[in-house]
Image 1 (cartoon, rainbow, N blue to C red):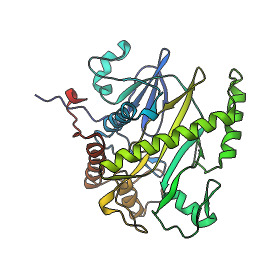
Image 2 (tube, one colour):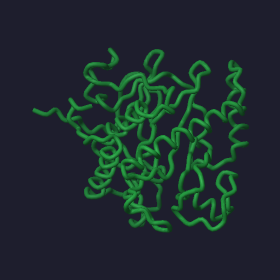
Image 3 (cartoon, rainbow, N blue to C red):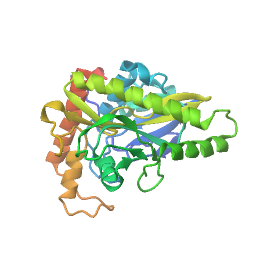
Length: 317
């Protein structure tokens, strides 16, 4: 008999530190435990309905990239919770954690969203239309929507506690990191050198992932990373190259100037855009077919990129 991993919309376990839009964070001695739930958000609002299996899929995809791409090293992941490997104090909750919880090194997250763009789309396209640049990087005139850039660019943004992240220049990001390091007081790191390393690693990870995706028939249009410090060592942190943090497009349907089919939550956003919702809580109910098709998109991305089918069989994660 197959034991199916349950849908988890919320966890309430000991030592909760923070509950984000998708992830619940727990303190685990000198480590942390990040639990990816099946919640889904759009326009910064968490929907009432979950996407069954989404949290497991996001965790498994992050693990795949961390184990596959050399540029992801060093990173924060110690292990993904399983029946064989589970923190002792959380063993009674293994059904909620199996395959979706990452035990990670405790890092101090650097307050910069590290975005790499290989194609011009989304907020980058809007900024380019208005200014001819993205995050202070001047781009050639006449670029079309969804067009490939001459080369990938690093376009940092703020990490907003509330509201939307805002694009900033590399110089501004160095100033932000300088203030962050000054508050720490205990570090001797140089802020510009640290941001230069973050920019280089972000571009290296993107370029390695984009080559892998191309071999799978996909375009990696853009993605975002987070980095943190652990004893002054720079570690890649949080989720990596998932449909929640990246745009993947099928190569055989790519058309410059058009909307691109994708494997993320764009289908949900499109439904909400057409629903008349004002994008303020509470969100409207999400139809079952939108939930099912959103899940199928996530599963297809995983199948193509990881080279294996996604399953909620407890023994397969």
